[in-house]
Image 1: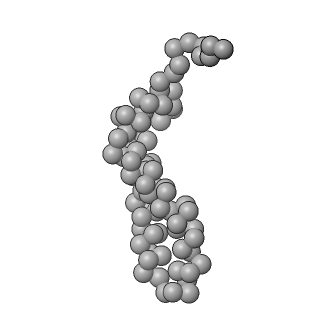
Image 2 (image 1 turned 180 degrees about the horizontal axis):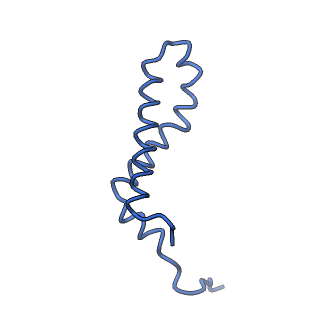
Image 3 (image 1 turned 180 degrees about the vertical axis):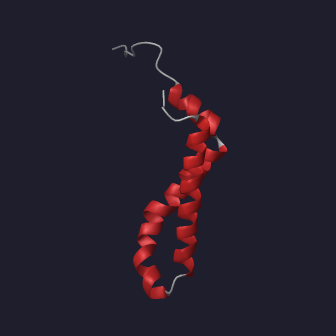
Length: 79
């Protein structure tokens, strides 16, 4: 089990989501010479972070139940 309560997890995810979203907005409206350096970072780090945190905020209960699930026993394959 996680030491964080669902409320704390939601607050952390929301903070990350808003912060990264603001940084992406800054990159979009930055001057061209600054944006050219930051665009690869935004593409490979920022956008996936916003997508993951957004999905987590949207489906938090399902994600938590999916992560909580454990295999019921040893899994073996028949030869």
